[in-house]
Picture 1 (tube, helix red, strand yellow):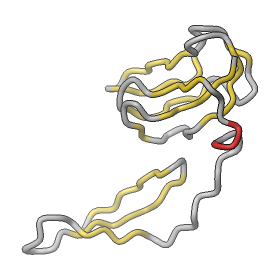
Picture 2: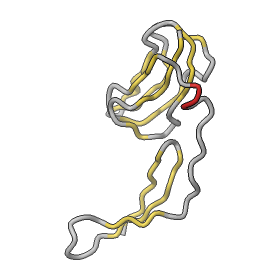
Picture 3: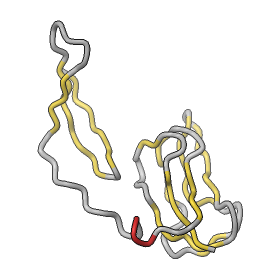
Amino acid sequence: MKNYTITVNGKAYDVTVEEKGGTSAPAAAPAAAPKAAPKAGSAGSAGSIKIEAGAAGKVFKIEAAVGTQVKAGDPVIVLEVMKMETPVVAPKDGVVASIEVAEGQAVEAGVLLATMNE
């Protein structure tokens, strides 16, 4: 048996995976976990400009909070990609409308990280 911590929408869940003989897929037994509450500045207040992950990695740091005025090229989120800190920058001048991830969260390429408004 192996224990893992899996993060879904910014909420961490502890799971135990047990390999059973004769089956090709491991069975996962999730620990009892509460349903994740929506994040502040998310979904309902999403902006029209999307900021997405260019590569798979882990959210290392959130540089700009919701409501922060940013200029094109300013870092909004820093991802750790292949052991390197990679800034994800604002594509144009605007205001951060929502942050859709949490520090420490694993993300895939193309995942929505944040939104902005001009």
